[in-house]
Image (cartoon, rainbow, N blue to C red; front, side, top):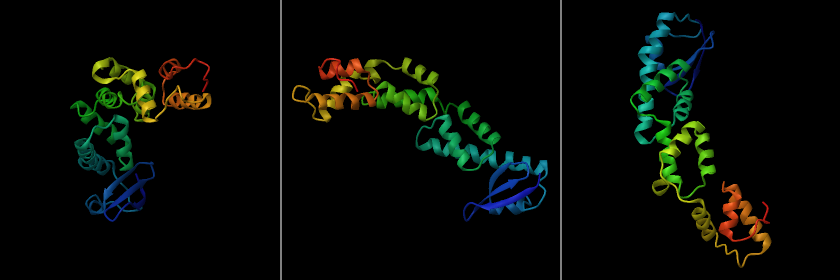
Length: 208
């Protein structure tokens, strides 16, 4: 394995590029320790030492430090480690480590999110946001199954009424066009049409 380039990332860190497309980051102070230089050959033994003695420990610590402040999904932690130029095998090992201790649990994350957002957002909107955070639809479904309506999830009709009140919308005084625009607004928020019509109190002729 030949070091093809050393790219400066900051005043203290560099990215090491090799002819085998393996890239990783080290502190500048570590270059001398492992005799890493542009054009130098990196033995398998040295590469393994860097991976196991330095980067794996560093990736685990990075995950732990991130999780001190708040919960992260598996996907979010992977993205954070990718930003640090950790190799895939190190990312997988570090993630397996924190998962094994229960520090990362996508179902628990989803349930917590549902508990916080379930009284202000529609289920469809919540599911969309969780998918964007890298949580599978299967895990989202399991999270919903562990939530009770009383504990976590407000009825959608209630959520719609809250939004109507927040928007100072009165269906009795609103014009047909104003009602139609409100239906479209609520539909984009992820609410189903029959519940929107019921909350507004107008017939189903207000197509969005």
